[in-house]
Amino acid sequence: MGIAKTLRDVTCTHWFRVGTASVVAAGVLTALYALAGHSHISITLQSALVHAAGMTTLVSLTVPRLRPAMEGRPAAMRWTVTIALLLTLALVGTALACGVITLLGLRPNEPFALCYRHDFSICVLITLTLGISMGLYDTQRRRLDAVTAALRDRELDHERARKTMLEARLASLEARLQPHFMFNTLNAISALIQEDPQEAERTVERLAALLRFSLDATERGLVPLEHELKIVTDYLEIERTRFAERLAYTIDVQPEAAGVEVPPLAIQTLAENSIKHAIAPRPSGGHVRIAASAVGERVVLSVWDDGPGFAADAMRPGHGLDNLRGRLAARFGDRASLEVGRRDGGTVVTVSLPRAAMP
Image (cartoon, rainbow, N blue to C red; front, side, top):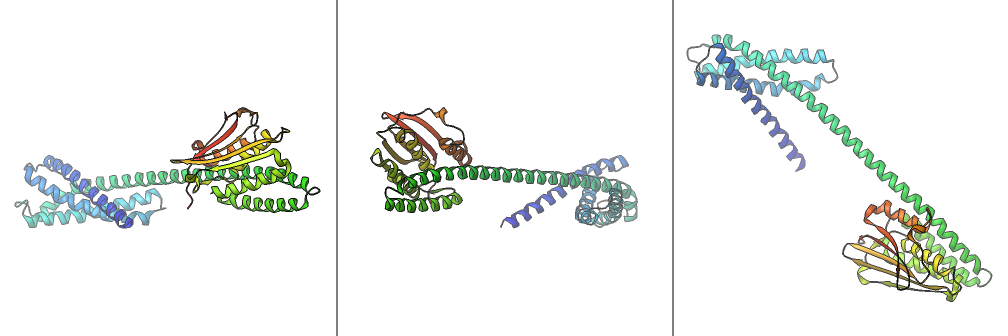
């Protein structure tokens, strides 16, 4: 259907141009006939319309078909062939038009030979003007189309380059995140090897699951919330092997958030931040509360802890929350945000991002 519509549009455009050129040529011919002594306006106009329709149709049907054969030839050769063709069309067009005028009796006192002699010079002038004008117009139009296509290709290349750059930036941020997470986990495992080998073995199994998740999630870009919460639970259980009763945590997920997708390791990064700032520095440890909700077209992820807190400008470049903020910016632009604040006597880090339902 799209191709048929395009063909109809091209055909309509072609014949609209033919009709417009015919009307213009008829007007010019009428003026020239009047100057040549044909004073009767009705006869002059009728003759002009016949000549204009014939010449315009001949030029529009032949000149465009000549151009593909002349592509790549020198300009002098192209214009020489074009002018020769136009003169031939003027000869044929004048004969056809005068034949029609004679048959219809539009100029009863003027036989075919006299009509041809009177009209030929004017028809040559109009045919050359019409053909050359159409040639120049089509040449400029093709140049404009070529420039437009080049600009469109350049814009597409720019968009591809921008997308590649964002993907590379995101991959770089995620690559920096994964070793950081793994080293912390290996430290937890090393502390268990001597004290509780069985727990160390379970922790190794959790680490293997986390690494598989991390590798798969990096390729997908977004992961189901329930999978992200599974990795967070595994991570917190690993950390509990280090902190024991010093670490307590709760996870609260609203039902409407169950079907959303989130960036991989996003909540884990927030939880790791709480472990670092609220649990590890204090002999008494602390509590971490993870929450997820979906309101309208937004998903809100938050991790609260009862630690002393920190300022948002204290985030060091390239680590932890700054890394997560960069990942969010690369994937969502200004549609996602990461904020640090105080609530219920503790610190809460909140991530807000566009909602993406699971396929």
